[in-house]
Length: 480
Image (cartoon, rainbow, N blue to C red):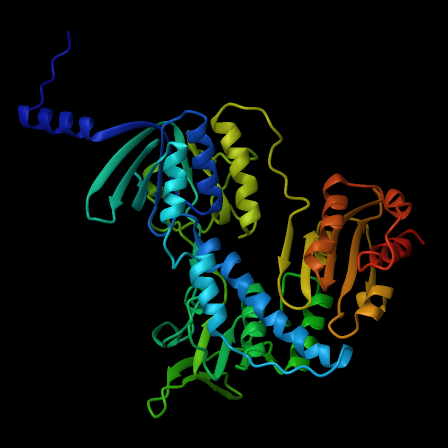
């Protein structure tokens, strides 16, 4: 028989701590789309689930990203089409108004930034939902600092899933963090628009919001440190988008270095010093990347680096070196996209439930920037394919030269670019830029995903006259 030689006070404290730790099957930290879907599915499967988020259930996408920003894009596209009608169908008079956009975002997209419906949906599935900060407290353990100041602790018998997401990053420009600025979170809540705007960053968020604001009458300048807009995409796409923006009156400053940012005390304008010139605007939108929310989740308690910018996971989303820990979403480094998080969520859910299923593969990862024209891409760019050591062949065709582009008229700018592995005779990447470029991309994403032989693509019947028929022209060039 063993005897506990500790003082009674220590024994009592340990006993109280043991009683305070609640036993559950799964704890999900972070309820963006992937985390919410996983928690829902696992709870519906009969496991006890605690789902934690420090902000809104649903995450960035429904409240500050995909959904409200696409409402903004849709509104600005309607304005552009109205102006094009003058060339196509007669005189059109348009009066811009931001109020309907702001009201639609608040009422329809975000429920006035209230997640009550999402919480109830999770609870109806059987999960316990907590608003607060969830932190690892050792293998299989999560402590929660609740929004009301209380605390709860959980031990997860099956495991813990991390889906903490990212937050807007502010570049280390002297003064930039201290000047009043928008990120994607503030711009979607705007009820009034400024007369002028500087957008720091020419990636997807910056490009989409710059065009939206410009079409609503805001004088816009984009400041991009790289050589072109949409740097990771094919160069042809970024260059063409720059031409479109210039035609629409958006100024794009590339290869820029921002020396400092400040506020002019005389008129309250934001001043950016670029060295060779000084930019001024009423507002600044910082859209220069994202910071992973890994710095406050207790990684050190399970032997991981708390300063890490990503978590290494295997093809079942299990975190390397830590038993019973899964991670999904932005923090695993395969793209900060809702569809990637949802894809990974299904894989982690199957693994948690002991179900079979295909492992994670990212060879045909699609992405779309919802500018006008849309820019869709899938798989490898030409540069990435060459760096991977493949024998590369490419083909490209302008979308506006297709029959549909000719009949479409203004606004038909775009291109189809295909990247093929010549040794295997399959596509490994593609870009579809143009009206509904993200929809055209579906055919190309399937071809890359399923590794459809080029010969098969070359024998397809492509409907006429469509934008996607331009794919036939590019495939013919590859096969020729």
